[in-house]
Length: 202
Image 1 (cartoon, rainbow, N blue to C red):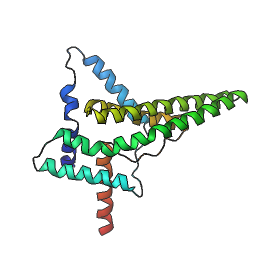
Image 2 (tube, rainbow, N blue to C red):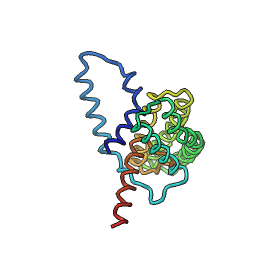
Image 3 (cartoon, rainbow, N blue to C red):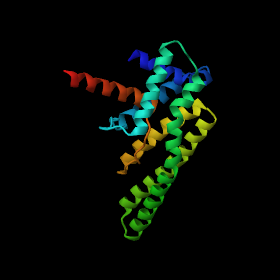
Protein backbone atom coordinates (compact mmCIF):
# COMPACT_ATOMS: atom_id res chain seq x y z
CA UNK A 1 0.00 0.00 0.00
CA UNK A 2 2.87 2.39 0.78
CA UNK A 3 4.25 1.74 -2.71
CA UNK A 4 0.93 2.69 -4.31
CA UNK A 5 0.78 5.84 -2.25
CA UNK A 6 4.22 6.72 -3.64
CA UNK A 7 2.72 6.69 -7.13
CA UNK A 8 -0.03 9.08 -6.06
CA UNK A 9 2.60 11.47 -4.76
CA UNK A 10 4.48 11.36 -8.06
CA UNK A 11 1.33 12.08 -10.08
CA UNK A 12 0.48 15.02 -7.86
CA UNK A 13 4.00 16.34 -7.18
CA UNK A 14 3.63 19.56 -9.12
CA UNK A 15 0.54 20.45 -7.12
CA UNK A 16 2.64 20.68 -3.99
CA UNK A 17 5.48 22.38 -5.84
CA UNK A 18 3.14 25.15 -7.01
CA UNK A 19 1.35 25.60 -3.67
CA UNK A 20 1.73 29.17 -2.30
CA UNK A 21 3.70 29.60 0.90
CA UNK A 22 2.32 32.20 3.23
CA UNK A 23 2.95 33.09 6.85
CA UNK A 24 0.41 33.42 9.64
CA UNK A 25 -2.14 31.19 7.90
CA UNK A 26 -2.49 28.53 10.60
CA UNK A 27 -6.00 29.56 11.64
CA UNK A 28 -7.26 29.69 8.05
CA UNK A 29 -5.66 26.34 7.28
CA UNK A 30 -7.27 24.72 10.31
CA UNK A 31 -10.68 26.08 9.30
CA UNK A 32 -10.20 24.79 5.76
CA UNK A 33 -9.26 21.33 7.04
CA UNK A 34 -12.32 21.26 9.30
CA UNK A 35 -14.52 22.17 6.34
CA UNK A 36 -12.95 19.46 4.17
CA UNK A 37 -13.38 16.90 6.93
CA UNK A 38 -17.06 17.80 7.23
CA UNK A 39 -17.53 17.35 3.48
CA UNK A 40 -15.74 14.01 3.62
CA UNK A 41 -18.16 12.80 6.29
CA UNK A 42 -21.09 13.79 4.07
CA UNK A 43 -19.64 12.07 0.99
CA UNK A 44 -21.14 8.66 0.24
CA UNK A 45 -18.63 5.82 0.57
CA UNK A 46 -17.06 5.00 -2.77
CA UNK A 47 -18.03 1.51 -3.87
CA UNK A 48 -16.05 -0.71 -6.20
CA UNK A 49 -18.11 -1.80 -9.24
CA UNK A 50 -18.97 -5.49 -9.33
CA UNK A 51 -17.64 -5.57 -12.87
CA UNK A 52 -15.20 -3.06 -14.31
CA UNK A 53 -15.82 -1.64 -17.76
CA UNK A 54 -13.16 -1.99 -20.42
CA UNK A 55 -12.12 1.64 -19.96
CA UNK A 56 -11.95 1.33 -16.17
CA UNK A 57 -9.82 -1.79 -16.40
CA UNK A 58 -7.52 -0.11 -18.92
CA UNK A 59 -7.08 2.85 -16.59
CA UNK A 60 -6.15 0.59 -13.69
CA UNK A 61 -3.65 -1.24 -15.90
CA UNK A 62 -2.00 2.09 -16.71
CA UNK A 63 -1.94 2.96 -13.01
CA UNK A 64 -0.19 -0.31 -12.19
CA UNK A 65 2.28 0.11 -15.05
CA UNK A 66 3.22 3.59 -13.85
CA UNK A 67 3.59 2.18 -10.36
CA UNK A 68 6.16 -0.34 -11.64
CA UNK A 69 8.12 2.41 -13.36
CA UNK A 70 8.12 4.55 -10.22
CA UNK A 71 9.28 1.64 -8.09
CA UNK A 72 12.03 1.09 -10.64
CA UNK A 73 13.25 4.62 -10.08
CA UNK A 74 11.89 6.07 -13.32
CA UNK A 75 10.18 9.42 -12.80
CA UNK A 76 8.44 11.42 -15.53
CA UNK A 77 5.59 13.41 -14.01
CA UNK A 78 4.35 14.88 -17.29
CA UNK A 79 4.40 11.54 -19.10
CA UNK A 80 2.62 9.75 -16.25
CA UNK A 81 0.04 12.52 -15.94
CA UNK A 82 -0.83 12.37 -19.64
CA UNK A 83 -0.95 8.58 -19.70
CA UNK A 84 -3.19 8.19 -16.65
CA UNK A 85 -5.53 11.09 -17.34
CA UNK A 86 -6.05 10.45 -21.05
CA UNK A 87 -9.11 8.27 -20.49
CA UNK A 88 -10.38 10.70 -17.85
CA UNK A 89 -10.24 13.58 -20.33
CA UNK A 90 -11.89 11.53 -23.09
CA UNK A 91 -14.68 10.42 -20.78
CA UNK A 92 -15.28 13.94 -19.46
CA UNK A 93 -15.53 15.26 -23.00
CA UNK A 94 -18.35 12.78 -23.63
CA UNK A 95 -19.99 13.64 -20.31
CA UNK A 96 -20.38 17.35 -21.12
CA UNK A 97 -23.49 16.77 -23.24
CA UNK A 98 -24.80 14.10 -20.84
CA UNK A 99 -24.71 16.43 -17.85
CA UNK A 100 -26.14 19.27 -19.94
CA UNK A 101 -29.09 17.07 -20.93
CA UNK A 102 -29.72 16.17 -17.30
CA UNK A 103 -29.61 19.84 -16.36
CA UNK A 104 -32.18 20.63 -19.05
CA UNK A 105 -34.42 17.71 -18.03
CA UNK A 106 -34.43 18.73 -14.39
CA UNK A 107 -35.05 22.36 -15.27
CA UNK A 108 -38.18 21.23 -17.11
CA UNK A 109 -39.24 19.26 -14.02
CA UNK A 110 -38.60 22.40 -11.95
CA UNK A 111 -40.90 24.43 -14.20
CA UNK A 112 -43.59 21.74 -14.03
CA UNK A 113 -43.34 21.53 -10.24
CA UNK A 114 -43.82 25.30 -10.03
CA UNK A 115 -46.93 25.05 -12.21
CA UNK A 116 -48.29 22.24 -10.02
CA UNK A 117 -47.59 24.19 -6.83
CA UNK A 118 -45.02 21.72 -5.47
CA UNK A 119 -42.41 24.05 -3.93
CA UNK A 120 -40.27 21.36 -2.26
CA UNK A 121 -39.99 19.31 -5.44
CA UNK A 122 -39.30 22.47 -7.41
CA UNK A 123 -36.52 23.42 -5.02
CA UNK A 124 -34.81 20.02 -5.34
CA UNK A 125 -35.13 19.97 -9.13
CA UNK A 126 -33.77 23.48 -9.45
CA UNK A 127 -30.80 22.67 -7.22
CA UNK A 128 -30.06 19.44 -9.09
CA UNK A 129 -30.29 21.25 -12.43
CA UNK A 130 -27.79 23.85 -11.25
CA UNK A 131 -25.45 21.12 -10.03
CA UNK A 132 -25.54 19.37 -13.39
CA UNK A 133 -24.70 22.68 -15.09
CA UNK A 134 -21.71 23.02 -12.77
CA UNK A 135 -20.65 19.45 -13.50
CA UNK A 136 -20.75 20.08 -17.24
CA UNK A 137 -18.53 23.11 -16.67
CA UNK A 138 -16.10 20.97 -14.69
CA UNK A 139 -16.10 18.38 -17.47
CA UNK A 140 -14.76 21.16 -19.71
CA UNK A 141 -12.23 22.26 -17.08
CA UNK A 142 -10.91 18.70 -16.79
CA UNK A 143 -10.45 18.47 -20.55
CA UNK A 144 -8.71 21.84 -20.57
CA UNK A 145 -6.42 20.80 -17.71
CA UNK A 146 -5.40 17.70 -19.64
CA UNK A 147 -4.71 19.63 -22.86
CA UNK A 148 -2.52 22.10 -20.94
CA UNK A 149 -1.00 19.42 -18.72
CA UNK A 150 -2.08 21.49 -15.73
CA UNK A 151 -1.83 19.02 -12.86
CA UNK A 152 -2.95 21.53 -10.24
CA UNK A 153 -6.11 22.41 -12.15
CA UNK A 154 -6.79 18.74 -12.86
CA UNK A 155 -6.52 17.80 -9.19
CA UNK A 156 -8.77 20.68 -8.13
CA UNK A 157 -11.35 19.97 -10.84
CA UNK A 158 -11.59 16.26 -10.05
CA UNK A 159 -11.99 17.02 -6.35
CA UNK A 160 -14.73 19.56 -7.10
CA UNK A 161 -16.48 17.04 -9.32
CA UNK A 162 -16.65 14.50 -6.49
CA UNK A 163 -18.11 17.17 -4.22
CA UNK A 164 -20.82 17.93 -6.78
CA UNK A 165 -21.66 14.23 -7.01
CA UNK A 166 -22.15 14.24 -3.24
CA UNK A 167 -24.35 17.33 -3.46
CA UNK A 168 -26.50 15.63 -6.11
CA UNK A 169 -27.08 12.66 -3.84
CA UNK A 170 -28.02 15.04 -1.02
CA UNK A 171 -30.91 16.46 -3.08
CA UNK A 172 -32.12 13.03 -4.16
CA UNK A 173 -30.55 12.97 -7.64
CA UNK A 174 -28.21 10.38 -9.09
CA UNK A 175 -24.87 11.35 -10.65
CA UNK A 176 -24.32 10.13 -14.18
CA UNK A 177 -22.16 6.98 -14.25
CA UNK A 178 -18.53 7.69 -15.08
CA UNK A 179 -15.88 5.56 -16.73
CA UNK A 180 -12.92 6.82 -14.74
CA UNK A 181 -11.33 6.80 -11.30
CA UNK A 182 -9.36 9.46 -9.48
CA UNK A 183 -5.94 8.25 -8.33
CA UNK A 184 -7.26 7.76 -4.80
CA UNK A 185 -10.19 5.75 -6.11
CA UNK A 186 -7.88 3.69 -8.32
CA UNK A 187 -5.71 2.93 -5.30
CA UNK A 188 -8.79 1.82 -3.36
CA UNK A 189 -10.18 -0.29 -6.22
CA UNK A 190 -6.86 -2.10 -6.63
CA UNK A 191 -6.67 -2.87 -2.91
CA UNK A 192 -10.25 -4.22 -2.87
CA UNK A 193 -9.72 -6.37 -5.96
CA UNK A 194 -6.50 -7.74 -4.48
CA UNK A 195 -8.32 -8.61 -1.27
CA UNK A 196 -11.08 -10.36 -3.23
CA UNK A 197 -8.55 -12.38 -5.18
CA UNK A 198 -6.81 -13.46 -1.96
CA UNK A 199 -10.14 -14.54 -0.46
CA UNK A 200 -11.03 -16.50 -3.61
CA UNK A 201 -7.83 -18.52 -3.30
CA UNK A 202 -8.64 -19.60 0.23
